[in-house]
Image 1 (cartoon, each protein chain N blue to C red):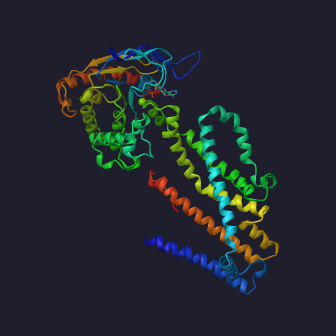
Image 2: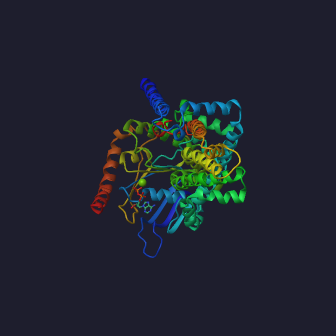
Length: 262
Length: 258
Ligand SMILES: Nc1ncnc2c1ncn2[C@@H]1O[C@H](COP(=O)(O)OP(=O)(O)O)[C@@H](O)[C@H]1O
Ligand SMILES: [Mg+2]
């Protein structure tokens, strides 16, 4: 059974007779446990696609199934790591991590205990009492990651989560993500505009066409062995081959986007 | 640190020189003391009030009115602000009435409240409420409408129902806006009680000032004003302390200096 299945999905932000589709004709199946990345030019609809899978917006037509069940409404099976900051500024790091547990009615003491375990996993145990504004960008992302994973979602949606970080922080976050993921192999949909990041993390990379009416135009299996280290994997010859193939596809779409924006 | 001390000294110097000038000008009768009072007599009046304890019931009444107006007005503003921000239908229905009430000079309600609620504390409390309510209401209303949609989406994905969203996202962010309007709200509550007393009452510092005015005792009028100012400063200090504690999660750059 597929973890995620989109069949004939179209989506438009406008409602009415004449629809400009942001996404159109999306057919996609993702096996449980797969790490899938989407790459595509800016504004093609990557964030929109994740919103659809999370059930934060509904397809204009077509159908979304999660684990064989039709979805209509917010999908609480999904953990979502947003591109921009999603931490509540009035809660400490620990309180932010345990937010999902509190909302689900977990008793305070066990929530705190589990929260500390997760803060330890993202190496922030000593910062549990700090408020978001007292943490660096990389630390906030790690808190957000712990916050998303603590409720043990079956599907993890990540929207360019590391794009705002500097290169070193970014690589260590990518390694941390792979570590945490390898523990229980959740289904991951990872959106990025960085081809290298997509290849080094994923089992499968899909290229989206330029918008409007964006849809998948090519997909590439990534068969590099795991466990991977995001530094070392970039030196493998297969890596460079895939990177060149993906870039050949993506380049045309980026040029179309640029031409449209001019 | 050093420049802070210097600043305080300069501020103190400014105050003393203004009072000094007042003293000299009224002693030499350049300014007629009948209209301008004398600083020492004003000070004497305050000492007398505290020495014979006659001031305490008045001060107590004024502070009680202020406190009631502040607490009730703030809570009502918070609840209504949240409600209208989360219910666009109610907001668009009530919009013109809210605007009308807010732009009305509410001091003219004082005589009506005196008729409705009598000359006791409640007519003043209600006047204060009408002043406090709108400050907190608008602050919360606009604040909650600007709540980061990502916080809401994220709490929904964690399984948050409407009630949970209110408790974990909307209410805490509304509280932040309440605190940002608290200085103005306390000031307004105070204005409401004093004006209410001034326009008709049998006790309170506003009443005391009115009495003194009736017998042209300018020193007692000024003493009352000084007392009110000191009370307002104290209330403001209390608010600042609360703010420091409850808004400690905010970055220091946006912290109030005071
Ligand atoms: N809330 C919205 N209302 C209307 N249009 C939107 C909204 N969000 C995004 N769009 C449009 O949809 C397209 C896809 O946006 P998005 O999914 O954010 O792209 P990406 O994440 O790939 O950069 C863009 O053209 C954008 O302008
Ligand atoms: Mg995006």
